[in-house]
Image (tube, rainbow, N blue to C red):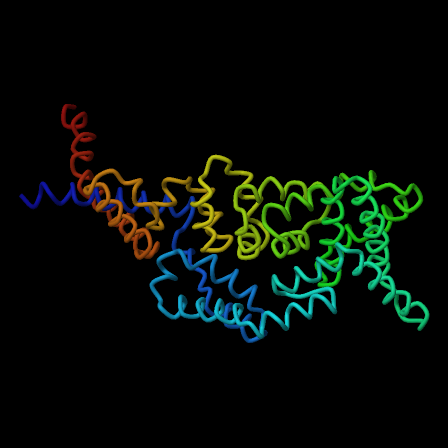
Length: 365
């Protein structure tokens, strides 16, 4: 009985080893390690960046590996409580009103309101004018945006609000400049276009530049818009972000951040993959998206144990879990050893029959 089962078992063992090595050649799931959001969240809190801390931790909190740790949920609750504190909100409101910038929503709202009512534009032109008189460095981008803001305010009243999106976009850009989130290509464009607008007394030349900014703001809000804007290299890329944020919404910024800016490239190359699976793969960082692309959606999600609804039967599910275990835990060196030993085993078993086969003609002579 043992003689019968030994070669069958050896074949199965060798086959399994070959399959595992083949799959590892496509993508080795052992390289996947979940991002732990706790350390970076605590770092943001220590710098009093509560908005960024909540945004970052919220991205991961819905996934079991984060949700199961009660520390994560408590930390998120503490951040929200801090942001809801009345004294904290009042401080941030005044910060936005007086400085024209703030990291909090209420501060951004007050900064935005002052800009939208032309007060902010006059304030900023006065500040830059004083810099010029005192022989200090003048921020030409702020000057350009403030002059455009005054022109846009007048145009908004004249057109009964029709150009309000243009005014909003200008305010977004000015805010972005103050918090160092305007890319250099856009700063140069704004100075050039402002000169044209001031000469023509028209904002028509700015529509192509400002339209995608307003669309981003409308979909994902100010904070997310500025974070994405900072990473753009040209107008074409800015427009592509509008399309991609329609898929990932307010998760777009963190998605881009944790995948080192590669998330949207992978998303473009996998148009048929579900958004929720791209987001889950991103919890492994860029490597997760790389694995998703190489292995395919169904296989990848099975290998990482997410989306178990893809498995139709208990039997298949158990078999797949066992294969996953081997895939993640058996060293490649052991698999190569099994294959070599299996090959030697069958070589030895076939040696005598083959030798006899070749000796038959000799015996006949």
